[in-house]
Amino acid sequence: MFYIGCHLSVTGGYAEMGRRALSIGATTFQFFTKNPRGRSSGSFPSSEDTAELIRILNDNGMHAPLAHAPYIYNPSSKDEKIREYTAEAMGEELRFLENIPGAMYNFHPGCHVGQGAGAGIKYISDMLSRIMWRGMTTKVLLETMAGKGTELGRNFEELAAIIDAVDGSVRDSVGVCLDTCHVHDGGYPIAEDPAGVLEEFDRVIGLDRLCAVHMNDSMNQVGAKKDRHARIGEGHIPVSAMEALINHPALRDVPFYLETPCDLDGYAGEIALLKSLRREA
Ligand code: FE
Ligand code: FE
Ligand code: ZN
Image (tube, protein in one colour):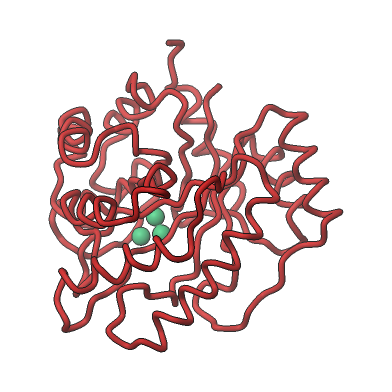
């Protein structure tokens, strides 16, 4: 099964996201657990809504969704209050996600602003060790970042350092979500040599940790450290590179999520395009 979907609005509830995903030909989807830029603590869906979503996923052979943490969380902040708020909110979301079998949780490692990458990395791994628990079923994914400002996760080495420092009792539940626009903007030649970038990922982190891909084109040149997503085929990452990724032997069962500047019709078109490029194994 080719698991391909896009980011969807949570408006209308969880089951509604499942129906909307189906209506555009998606076999999975991503959503924000809360308003991405606001602190308002959105509410979790009712158990009926969650059960209905699970039924839709099962009936249609879909991959469970990828929940994306709000941008406002900053687990590597030097401000203890912000770190504490982030840990509490993420912990609550992880406990809720246990209700959706197979769901994954993606977050940005955050910005270390001033205190240095080493300190930021330690804050993140300490927080994960604290809010995760042995036996949890949700995979917690660190997203590869473009490296704007003091953003952590701008290279594979930083992500490997975070994972290595997480407590061994929960480390198996930590993975990575590779964002194609971000790694391109971060300086990796994913446009020219996608297989080579995956080899580098394997050497530094291990491909067994690669649990999801954010499939985005980039408006900027490789290494620009900008993070501006473009529609598929309209930026600096050729469709041939995306074709190589979706057909890579190590990524056959990994879900792909579009986060391009599209409305639902636009996403339907991009999903159809990527499906047409996927080959039988
Ligand atoms: Fe993200
Ligand atoms: Fe992303
Ligand atoms: Zn981005």
